[in-house]
Amino acid sequence: MKTISALSLAAVAAAVSASGSGFSLFQGDATGIADAAGSIAKGGRVGDMYYNPATLGATTGTVVQAGSFFTRPHLKIVTKSPYTGETRKTAGDKKWFAIPHAYFATSLCEDVRFGFGLFSRIGLGDEFPRSWPGRYNSTKVDFQTIDLSPSVSWRATDWLEVAAGVTFQYFDITLEQEIDAAGIAGMRPYNDPAAGPRLDVHQRIHGEDDCAVGWDLGVRVDPVERLHAGLAYHSSVTAKAKGHVSYDAPLPVRAAYPAFFQYTKAHGQIEEPDYWMGAVAYDFTDALTLGFNVTRSGWSSWDKLEIHEDKPFLPGHGTIGAEKDWNDVWRFAFGGAYRIDENWTVRGSFTWDDSPINRRHADYIVPADTREIYAVGLSWESGAWALDATYFFEKINDMTVSGRPAEGVFDGRYCDGFSHAFAFSASYLF
Image 1 (tube, rainbow, N blue to C red):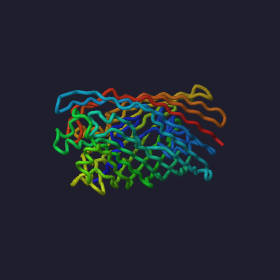
Image 2: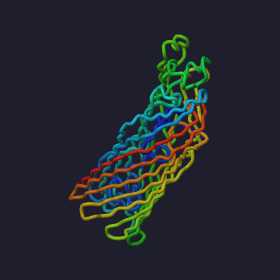
Image 3: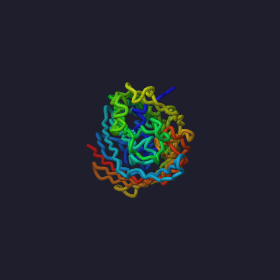
Image 4: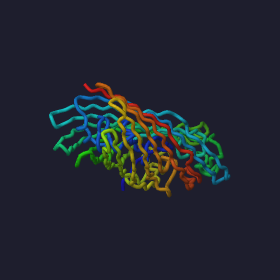
């Protein structure tokens, strides 16, 4: 059984962001957000190596690219208390999150290109009030990876290019939540959100990893004139995480249980999903290209959530787990690009992104369902410079949640989920 410790994955709890397929990020650069099919099958920007390293051959000379993706997610969670019947709607904290990227490419010889990318393939972040009804499941999360990815592509023939690379990943994660000390002591119903936070113990989990390693493969073909196709595989990344758990307990709790809720080290591992990305694109005219792409995300790797603490915060609580049983899912997108003139190009796409969440185990970890994403982008090129900008709107479908009070989850639903996002990239050809 593959397990993912809460030291790692709890950092994705209670977050909804402009990600997809769980908590994956598909925002490699500004053009890829607006037209992922073209970025996988045809290429043109060095940042397309995020999707398919075999697109390196579509660039020339020595080129650098840098930019960032900015998103502001919105989400409300409706909860119904099993103890009082009270229904409440809570909104997450509305913050802007930045996800930067940078790329470099150059020729090693006539048919071989080298590329290097710095980006994030996994990440989430959000915060709820420490007094909200779901506080015993999660209140705050910060989780973002930094991926360093060198790749080499080889132009085998006029119509075939193949590529391979490795990914070195670093991550830093923080999760905060409340523990119902009064409920544990039998002073009130366990995890009763109406009882107030006066005797709650604040728990903070922080973890990081020195380095995790994955690998990437890509192929790009131009089988006939005007037709382009690409296929890429990005392996799963498994990392052993180390960190600590700290507790902020009220004075009455400290006085009653001085040996409990003490700082302790924690450990575990995270296995992220692998990805298959495929696309076809066709140049209907010299100016217009349309394409379709499919992505499979292997989220069945997340079947259980576990915490391993060196010193249990309470006797018999050294390992705490919850079933997840997520599913492998598919992401479909249709998009295209239209070259207005020698300087300006407009792009657009629609994406349907399925949710991997098993509804039987749905909770406040990644509280989101299937998504619909609408994107428009504009590119400008002149001489050695290229500038790209994209806006997209992400609509998150509502999802019903079945209550499990022992886990701090109550009957209710995720609703009113959406996100506004912008991306900017700048490239320079030396």
